[in-house]
Length: 478
Image 1 (cartoon, helix red, strand yellow):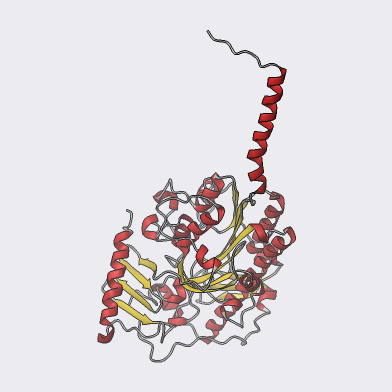
Image 2 (cartoon, rainbow, N blue to C red):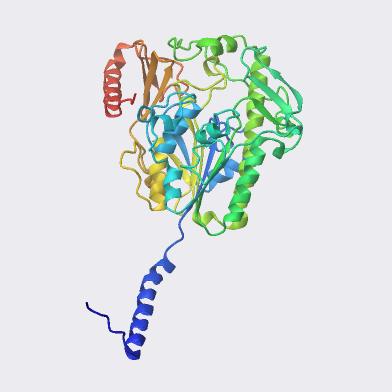
């Protein structure tokens, strides 16, 4: 059996010096390396481009406007499904709805893809502290705590996740009513007693700020999932005061607007209720939506102030998006879940180190968020992601975006619509054979369906072929 001879004193000294020098050679690059980026993900429920920075000078959103001033505002960012759960399941995984199998608000992502790695999970597994406050993943489960945690994707995506409820004072309604006589339970507004933190969004802002201040130098990804302006339209009274009764102008459809196909908009109990709206209901709905948007904006401002105080802007990637768009009276629709631009397109603003402030007018998709976050955090994303990094546009917003963006909806298990958006056109195919084509160069509100016109037949054929090619590339999982 061989034995090891202990080194003498001179050998030990030389050996120790060698270790010290080796340690310096290892530590020196680490000391020079930039700290890993934090990620602040602000997801706003049912937020369309009703923001000052997007050109709406009536709504009061000074905090999101100041975020846009220091980052890139994407003018044409598209959700892959214009409903909460499918959209969030898509962009948090970087997969299209046909890849996730989630096309409604009842299906749990992990029931379809138990082993999928979401982007907060990717960061969590590489040393980031991951915390979610409010609605990042779709909230479900009711009073069942274990099921509620699964809907928030605990413990896979987050170290901690928390949802919130209004306080007793915050539930006290000073004014408000159901706009449909109770036929649609969600369709009501309320001017509420109490202050910001008597409502969930105020509590979410407080929790996000407390977590930011607690973490110090540890890299983190924090989700701030603000609930408003999603229905029910409840906000503290002071936010309604920003919009005196009768001060808002309603949108009016043009009299020569082309009727939409049966499943495109205006269907079911929602359409029946909305068609009974008078201007009184329309004005109350619009006022309440704006009040909720301003309430949410104030909470965003509190979080941005925390980044100011902590001097974190040079090491934090800030992403704000609406999970999809929303109609506020276009085609007599007061909701989401259509394949018109108002529903598919949503705000997206990104600020952070190396981001050149400006406006990106190229097409982008929400599935691009995952590869963007992985890129900026120096991590390798899964190989099957559907999107691409937005870094080129963040470093130069004048660059072109994608050639096409895709969105789909379903109506139960039998009817489906698929839509393709190009720089100029929106083309939609329905499973019942209906077709739509809108020319955004001349008709940005998509009022005139050209699909049946002979002069655009080559365009319809080309876009239909591109749509079918896309569907073949992303077959739907069972």
